[in-house]
Image (cartoon, rainbow, N blue to C red; front, side, top):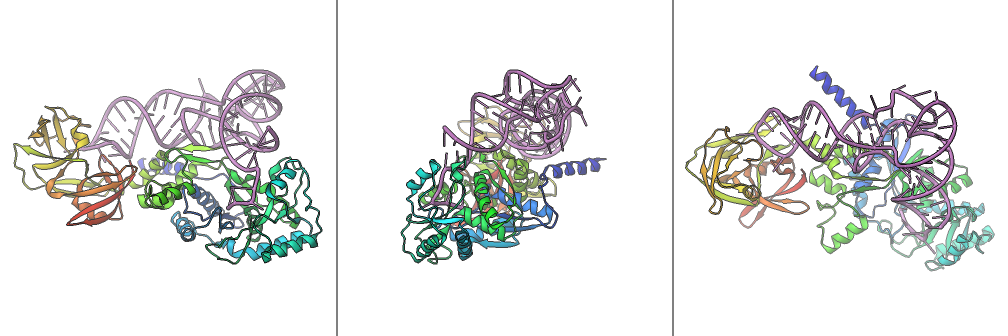
Length: 497
RNA sequence: GCUCCGGUGGUGUAGCCCGGCCAAUCAUACGGGACUCUCGAUUCCGUGACCCGGGUUCAAAUCCCGGCCGGAGCACCA
């Protein structure tokens, strides 16, 4: 009976995690893509793209393409390390790209396509200045270059590639409709000149495609059947459909999700994080305060929790504003039973207990599921947290968890007196505190929003790389044991409460 | 301003296409009880929502119109 209930619950949870069916999707024939710009590492926002696409591909037994939309070496300059980081992060989340495409390496392919479009008179070389064109566009008028004969456009195109124009002097535009009711769609730019060395392909090119062009061609070439992305790219579809019509291609099925805002991180964008790192506010892209996947991994989050978190948001088009608490809840479900328990005493106050001379050791439970014990010396010199100490009043009985009771005699002088071994008489809850014998304590620093320092059980040294729970404090990942001078100390990272 | 899109409890989400079984699902949050020598877990109970106004209909969260609010795009960024 109990077991039946258990599995039923699991199924319920599983069902929630399932995404709505994709229109026109056939098992085995779905091809989807995740297309980031590697101008920084994957963030929580990128994770949504990886998870939703990855999960659909898994459901439909399809193919996943990881494509780097890195065709602007200046404004959204790619970061060389980020390419591999994306591949790593994708794998960490449990998805594997069946194919990896680097747009910057395939620029000649895009050249060929645009040449064809120019020949067919569906694209033209435009020599207007940016604001000149804007005027034409806003008034629904054709610019003087629009009706250049294809040969003439082709000639300008050739000279663009030769470097005869400077930046801003010539672009290639796709012909749409200068009277289109949405000005954003009118004759958009497909290629522009950028004299800037590309981190990945160097000085090979001076004419780069815009995202809309590159993505349109690449989606077709890769045989993408379904595109799911943020709604900021919703106009892309309207623009790109012109190309698809001109070539007689079929546009993939699309779906867009709304903007996501995480309460705790607010406005942090890739570029603003970058700035803060350069300023030294953050230590790097894996600083625990930063919403990158690298940081969450470092903090000890399970990728499964991140997945559940995003799947629970669904793929609706309305904007969401969600708290990390939801992620914490998912992660807690996974790590609670794995994490060993230890005492971490923040802002330690050393007290000496009078009235007894303890001998031997105290055994404490190590893990709530697997059991096991950990051992601390029974001592009359122990650390307790200043945060607890502050709350006690003279005459109060305090329980050192799993050890013994004390009575606070004089708060000023830190005078504590032994008050028995048994639990009875102690109010459960707030008066049971964690503690640490002076003999088993070592220094510990916990990196978080605001760093916490204190003392921790020496045995924690064996947990490097693992997530533990510091009782009555939080879950933390033990990162390493570091030596400062003579002394070792534990460096841990705050995971979540 | 123009062009799209969206509005279900504090926060997310299901339901809306194909109106009735929705006095609206689930999660999280919050409040209270039990249990546990953790402020964690478990468990029980509770709080709490269909943006507003019209219309269609025997019947509307679901369809239609208007309003209000929110968002996205309007880049030689992605």
